[in-house]
Structure formats: C-alpha cells, structure tokens
Image (cartoon, rainbow, N blue to C red; front, side):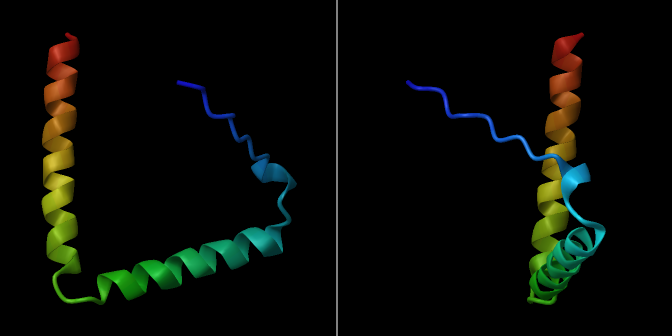
Length: 62
C-alpha cells in the first residue's frame, strides 16, 4: 500500500483575518449541528465511550 503524502500547513503564515473567518465558519457549523435534535446526546455518548477507550488504552500501555 502506498503512503499518502503528508500535508503540512504553516498556520503562522495564514493572515489573522483569514483564520478568524475560518473560526467563525467552524463555530457556525458546530452551532448548527448541535441545534439538531439528539445531537448533544449522541455527542455525550460518543465522548463517554472515547474517554473509556482512552482509559483502557492507557492501562494496557502500563
């Protein structure tokens, strides 16, 4: 299997106004997603499972 090329983004080279526009867009999308019925509950269930998995992984690494 061929390796995918690594994409490197120099965030410091992105102008402040552009980063702010990107952040505003990401925030608006996040607000829209979480306004959907059940989204918060699905997120909380995912987060609980993710944290449990991280704990299991950390214990296995000891």
